[in-house]
Length: 87
Image (cartoon, rainbow, N blue to C red):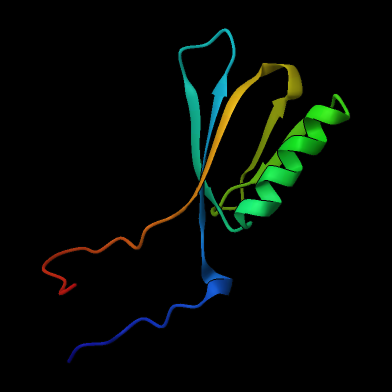
């Protein structure tokens, strides 16, 4: 018996990638905020010279000082299929 998963905009997830200056590593995580919300939080942190604070989809808090943000990539998460899913 096959089941289908209902998707809606409220359950949409956003992929976030933050480059850290003076480091070869970057932060990759998924959050429940919209792209516009993430961009607004990044802009506010930079304008106010404060810490960027975002929560990931697992409930963890990510904190990045504004002066360590080298770049930010924001995009909608793609649905992940496992097995032999029909497209």
